[in-house]
Each structure stands twice: as structure tokens, then as C-alpha cells.
Figure 1 (cartoon, rainbow, N blue to C red):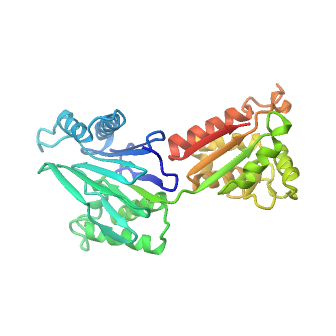
Figure 2 (figure 1 turned 30 degrees about the vertical axis):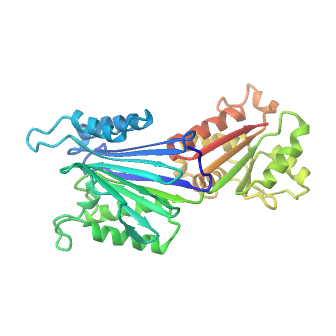
Figure 3 (figure 1 turned 135 degrees about the vertical axis):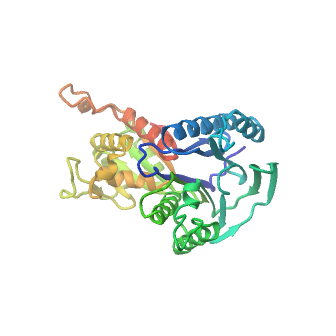
Length: 390
């Protein structure tokens, strides 16, 4: 399947543990297959809560993902999972429910559901129905197929969302699907480009509010948003040979999307080759990170290895949220997370200063730091990353 680069799948999820539990009994997995132009996602809800629920949900989600990636029949895989899971002796139901989404960049999408609340599909602000429904088991297992369009959103969630607030005078049976759909539609209406991250966070926050911030169950929501891609290029490091300077400058100038330069020498090369003024803001350094600079047509210019090292460190452990928004590393991280398709244009000339044994060991050579950042963006934040070495 050839990937349509005009069609990007923005995906994210948010979870809150049941009150009093240290782990979540819901598990969400997602995997992009670049070569196949395909994305697979699984949300599994373990019966009950806590460690036991997490183990069952993890096993279920992992099996489902393996079936998808092995190109096995998704229907047969769902049936195998259903038959493999142990059953609760009292309630006679399996120890985990699941929702599987298998979608391509051509829009062909299948949704397999067992035990979880039905996923919701929105086209603009309107909730739409599935085009096709096949009951594999009239009681629990369904397969739905549809052709999504640019702008569509798929919202999947555990029953911690739909049953939030249950027992309250104003919602005795929980957050019913109609009320939930109205909430989602209203948020899309307020911001037609609301991201997957922001929408699932709003839904989970509202569900937690329904439970008076003492969740009675694990609460998880995931959103897939089919939209135009947002692209960013990060140019860092001088080329291996000076005769490539003009090529790098032209590539950066002609790139369609946001543009970032990391490194003083790199910025000077671009400034010289494109005949653009480079100005340093001497007062913008923050929390030990050198200041930013400015150049027409470039969205952000930072120092090189120190800033990239901070980005790698704080992205990997999630501590970037503790950085000030004025910190150049945080400014770079915000742009990385805002965009979907990240291109790193990496110069391979060795900076002699970085080989000084008196410098801290974390000052790794540029390409290794960028490689770590690329892996984090792909594996933790579902970004599409390409790296070009010059």
C-alpha cells in the first residue's frame, strides 16, 4: 500500500487509574507501519482494576497487536483472543475486553470490538454510523468496516468513561452515549482542529469530574484524527564537507513546513548561504540553556548539542513539562510535539569541542543524540521521523 502523504493519522490517548489503584487496568497500544502505510491500535480493559486487570489487558492488547502485525486475519485473531482469555467463574465473562482498529492511509478502516463500549465516529461535528456491521458473535464480538475521510475522528474508550458519574441524580446510569457524543461534538465545534491529544484529555477530564475526581473505575480514551500532516525540519550541524553548505541551505529554504536550526555554526552557514541576517537574543537563555537567535523565514534557532541533549533527556522521562516555556529546549520540544512529520537534516562534520575529555559525558556526538530523540518521537509520541545525513 502506498502511503498518501497528504493524509496523516493523529493518535493519542489519556488514562486515569481507578481511585486507590497504583496501576491502570486499561492498556492502549499503537503501532505505525511506515512501509505498509498502516496504523494499528488496541485498547484493552482488564476485568476489575489493579495489577490483575493490567496483566490481563496487557496480554490481550499484545496478542491483538501481534495478530495485526503478522498480517493474520483480524477476525480470526479476535476470535482466538476471545477463546484464549480465562473467564471469571462467577460472571462467566472473559478477563479482558478489547477494541482493535486497523486502518490504512487510504482510509480503509476496520474496528473489531469485544466487550468495550462502541467506538464513536465523527465527521466534522456530526456523529456518523458505520457503513457495515458483521456480528461474529451476537453477544459480544462485532466487526465494523468503513472508509474514513480527511477530518474524521474515531473515539474509543473504556467503560470507565461511559459509566462515569453512575448513581448521580443527573446521570443515574452514567455518561450515556448521547450526552458523551454531544460533549465531543461541542468540543469539535469550538475548535475544528482540536488535536487527538487535547480531545482525549478533555473527555477523560470530564469523566473524572463526573466521578467527583474519585474515579470508580479506570478511565481511558483514545482518539484517531485523520487530517492534513504538519511538517517540521530540524537542521543541525555543518555538513561533512563545505561544498554541501549551499545544498543544505537550499533544502532548508525550500522545505514546506516549520523550520528549526540547532547550532551556532549551522545558523551561520545558513545565514551566509541565504544572505540573511542572524541576530542573537542575549537575554533569552534560560535554566542553563544558551539563548535563541532569529533569522527571517526560520521559526526557531537554538544552540546545538546542549539544547539537543536537554531535549533528549527530558523527552525520555517526561520531565520536559517541568521546563519553563521560555527555555529554548522546551521551545524546541513544543514544536516537535506540535508537528507530525519530523525531518532531521544532520551534518556529520565532527565538532572538535565535543571530543574534549574535560566536557561532561552526556555531551554525546550530535548524530547519536538526534538518533535518540528520533526514537523517542516515534515510539512514545507516534511521530513519523526521517533523518538525512550530509
